[in-house]
Image (cartoon, rainbow, N blue to C red; front, side, top):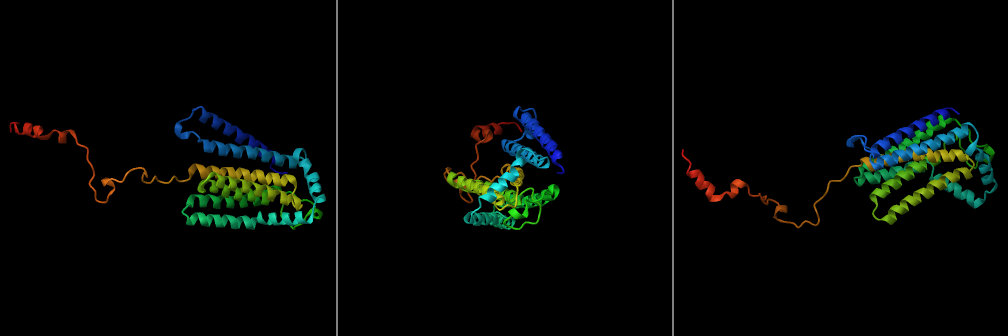
Length: 288
């Protein structure tokens, strides 16, 4: 498979660069203005680690060994254990996690955020979703991997197999929506529910593609990992550079005369003002 070795080298370089940058920032060996924040270090480190894992999956597919050896047994086990109810559920989940459904979900979230004046979050969701679509098409054409045999497929697919577009797209869209929910929702329970629900749906979408026989196991793993790389970068941008709202009036400050329209400002007395009549008399005794 093309670019498999190049990806591993690139992953190693990115990890090395991140380790150096993190070390310099941690030990304050660079000026404060150039130090990486904890959000940036965590997000970029996660992205670098996931990219290294993704490069390993691609290499295993290129030189069939390691985890790619589980592709055929995993597919055959799912084919042997199909049942009508499970098939209907897998088709429904696959439909929900498809490109069209994820695009509609992202569009709705963007519109809601935009009209609620959450313009920054809306922009990040839009960019994350568009980037996921570009990654799917680009990587499928680069890797050019055939799908499993047609005899195992329960739905029709005509493009390439690696990575799984459903796994990648759902990871990015559901992940970025969950990240935005953490920012805008109030209460730990609501935020936790959003994150857990997104994670469950992401896993379910990937498994549904395996069950339907349209992807190998490594296709789905690669989709999750590539989606995770892009999601980590988008979440880093979302949390690190989002605009901070201007502070409003202090609710604990009592409303005084200075808060009323047209009220005069209170001026602290200066030395000249406090000098009083004595200063004036001293000035009158000066010779002209």
